[in-house]
Length: 330
Image (cartoon, rainbow, N blue to C red; front, side, top):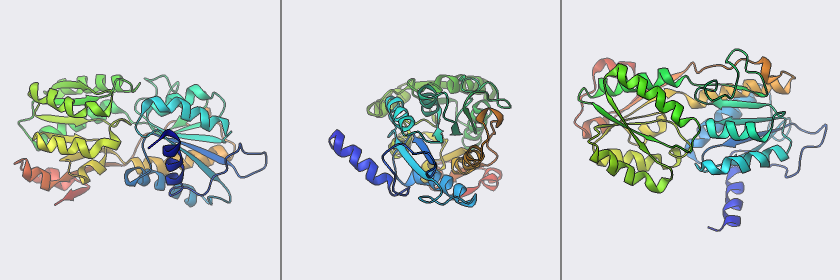
């Protein structure tokens, strides 16, 4: 599909998730406009988070097309697109921009220092220099954040609990993601505590995913941990299938990948974080400043276990683990 055609397609597809959107900057006194800078593509996976955000706004009394409008920009998992998309949104003069993930947040931060930015989710914004502290964000950015140092340790513990033979854990990571190196550092520290060897495999482009699995096998990895990254989400099913093909016990940061055939998923509920992001938007629309709104952390975590995949791998998941799961797929 040509560049113009693809752009028209994305705009048309975006209409599935939002009311019709005006093309010009918002005149004074008109309906407030919210910008959303999304890392993935319009579709079933992204719709859970977007629907949760829109539902959060509805629960707070907002009606799309009447009391608010929403402009979406989709990066399609391509980190290099964020800067241009953030600039596009800023030109539309929204009252607030909602983002998700380090590349999107940093692109929005670079594009504006005056328009409020709400992070629906990001890993370690203090370590990335996005906010001064969780309690006092400073600047024009606030929202919700993961503490990945704790999350990585829990994910590795779950892998070991599901398969006691796990000893070498491959990690796909994207060096183009500004937050990836920080996450990898947390994982290395956690792997020492859990007693496994971490084997990072660098992926810069989706075309390298299959080659990355060949590297894992050469390095004799017997498990996989896939951290959340805009590059990987649109290709999640491919990664799940390759993990199954190579008989790797794998844990993912998105529940959708366990539902698509991955062994396990553990992490914060991203839809719940998007729902809570609506509360920040509401407060900002009512006059609050981002600098005065502390950054909050996820309160709802989900463990999903796919027993069909476990049986295919010859794994017996402990009953104690199944009892802790939020969803067990048979």
